[in-house]
Amino acid sequence: VDGALASLIWLCERVVSPQTAELAVRFVWPLAWIFPAAACGLLIARSLGGRAAVFVCAVLLATNIQLYVQFRPGRVDHHNIQITMALIAAACALASAHRTRWAMAGGIAAALGLAVGIEALAFQALIGASYGLRLAMGPQEGRSARAARAYGLSLAAAAALFYMIQTPPWRWSMS
Image 1: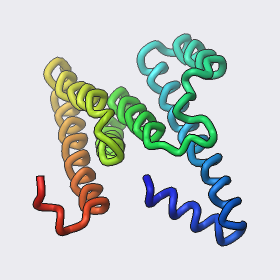
Image 2 (image 1 turned 135 degrees about the vertical axis):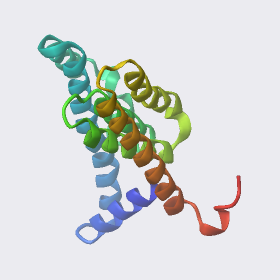
Image 3 (image 1 turned 180 degrees about the horizontal axis):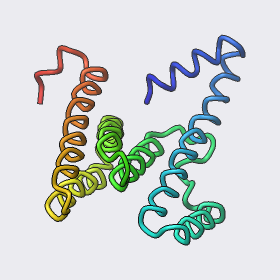
């Protein structure tokens, strides 16, 4: 997160003063995560309850400002990314079409959310368990197995990649 923020500030500084660049990033960064989070909320509602659930979810998203505490302008924090990545992973887990592709995207989102911070581990564990439960209970074992495998492999590969990116090589062997 710090690297992304520093990069955005650096990019903005090419156009505006350093103070204005920092102010712009402090404003835009949290707001940039609202839209994917809200879209995933609507997708999850559609998967679970159809059109009526989407309407109720949209009304709640439009009227309940408590949902946006972690996304308010000026709040430069890692929780908004973790929430968004958990919602992306959950929406991908609930996908019915192109399940294997969505499972891969969900695994990458889960890995990114966990690389940012471990606080969302319980949510990511439940999302991961949903692939196993669907495999165990579903009549389409082949399709469920491919999705579970895609999720697990993409989660493992992305987690290893994110670990190597954010951890200096001399610390890779440390617990």
